Length: 254
Image (cartoon, rainbow, N blue to C red; front, top):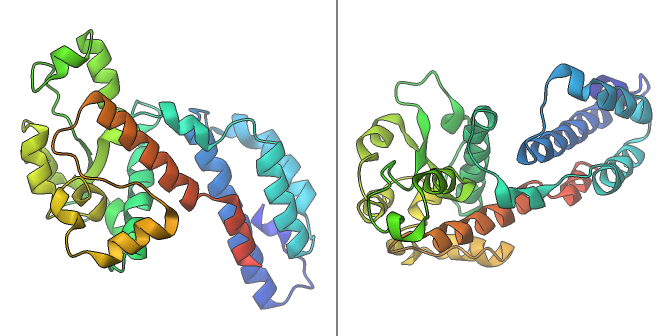
């Protein structure tokens, strides 16, 4: 797709813009497939990639941007609303750390914190980040037996998108048996996505509050974390995703 968009007559500035534009579209397209549990294997995407490649070949950059926005709006029958039911499973596991890293880095950078996406996804560092469940894997802990009809229902909710954050691997392992109340106190010293669960995150933190207001994001602390709280947090993650993967950002590359 990237090579198709470039015309031999393009100057370097235009070429760079086209590379960023097509890359941003690919990011938007893939994330919508992932949130909808659609496969990304070669045979599943080949026909689509081939057709898009033909449509954008050597076209002016403004026409490519317009085509991409129209494609997202009219040619994709799956979108970010699918996040309502997004959860961690065998398929999404390969993408979940990447998605949480994108969200965490975005929140922190927009709040004036020196944050780098590559640090969250670097699997070769001494203590890499892992996916942390807000609930311990213990159906008998806290109020779970009252809120869920079965252990199976609890386990399915536990893996939901809104019940996940990133933590360094060593801390992820040491926190796993703690109750949510115990964990939330520990989260205050971690990245901003995890830290936002703790009420102290909202005290003397004007940059974070300004970020919340800018994007109308309803962050809030949780003293306990119930089934309804998880569903509420899931909606917050959806709204954050809509900001990060907003099709209007394609215009930023023009």
